[in-house]
Length: 98
Image (cartoon, rainbow, N blue to C red; front, side):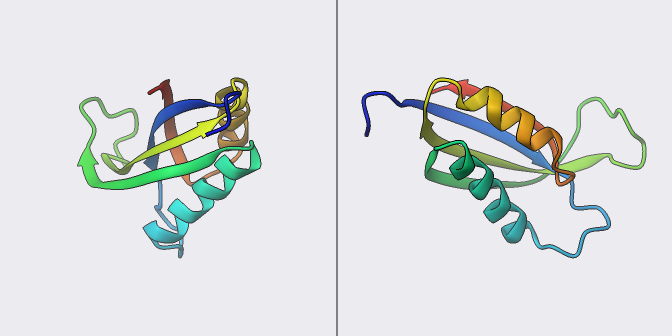
């Protein structure tokens, strides 16, 4: 690993309502977004569909959760959040230091 990179653990909730893409294709898109901010994905785990504890939208009661471990420069999480904000397939993203 490059000494200028940090390890991160990210949890993403995917929204594939009305989309023809499979979950695997959406995960590949998320990996491309991480690569766009100079990140290197080390592990991906699909946690499956889970119900939300608090529903903000009655038409969207559950989502597909994925866990991604990656290494990237220090400013990458902010850039990643900004890129994913424009992406309609990622409902929520949480990036934390690993």
